[in-house]
Length: 375
Image 1 (cartoon, rainbow, N blue to C red):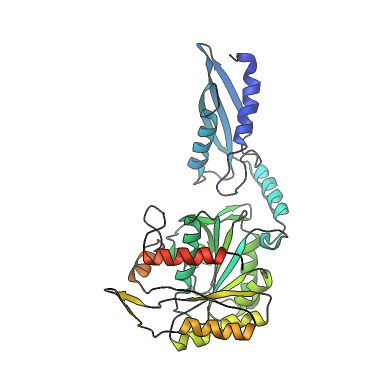
Image 2 (cartoon, rainbow, N blue to C red):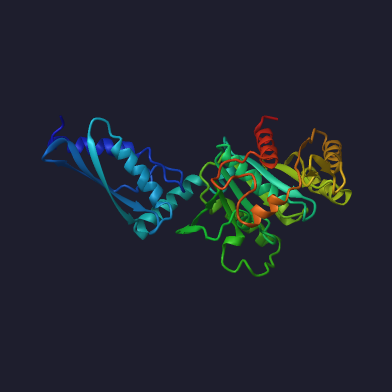
């Protein structure tokens, strides 16, 4: 059995085990981030197989909301050490301002501005657009993001509708992003990492921004927020074809546009214009979503807003763009989408965060699966 002389070896091996503990916000090993400055191992004189292990942990910010998660992961890594009985004691502290500054500088250097334009990026980017307001674009974005997360994808969302932001409400977010020396950590809700101007002080007042400032806000959301390497990034665009839609196309040329419409001509005719932006910018239109397609009443599908709008948008964009722009799905009109959304939970999720077994959830699951397929 190892004796006191082996404590150095045990400390080294514990450190190696902690290299597999990932910081939930930064998505990096806590040892790579310099969060474990020291480990102390003390043998139990009465039992050669028992050791007390003190792990000193420096969080990036005092009172980190995810400190409990990090502590649990460290405990698991230590107690599962094979062949020995290790009793962990975790001493929680915070990085010095100087150390945190060096870490943020390093992370920013690795990221090199917009992380989603780097060669070889794995992130699929879907910009959710509409020709006009009131068609449920933000609700589609929120429920689609929640679906991706529930299916196991690392999911991020940017509320790019600066004037009419709504993602914080739809996800029940009331907190602000953590500021790490100028680098923001996205708020996580229902498994989705997100950022919105609505999370900042003063956002309850009218926002009177023009083109250059709108573009700068998007650049900050992309470059000044630590996203890690998400599988999926969704952007909830403002209605129409204004400055933000053009900024997204310029900043994220690999983004795929998803156009949301409702069945009636007054919505679908305008929706076509949001897809035609692809004629002027390097963005591909992935497809069309017809929202509020029908209301299911006692087994009968009532077409409250008419029908055919989604297919009309699909057909017109296919002809104008010269490639297939499919009608991806027809989503039903259901009161619970509004009710649960206003209560801060995407309708596709159960209260425990798992994907619900409902027509709405199944429709979004099929939509998410179809979007991630190769095309």
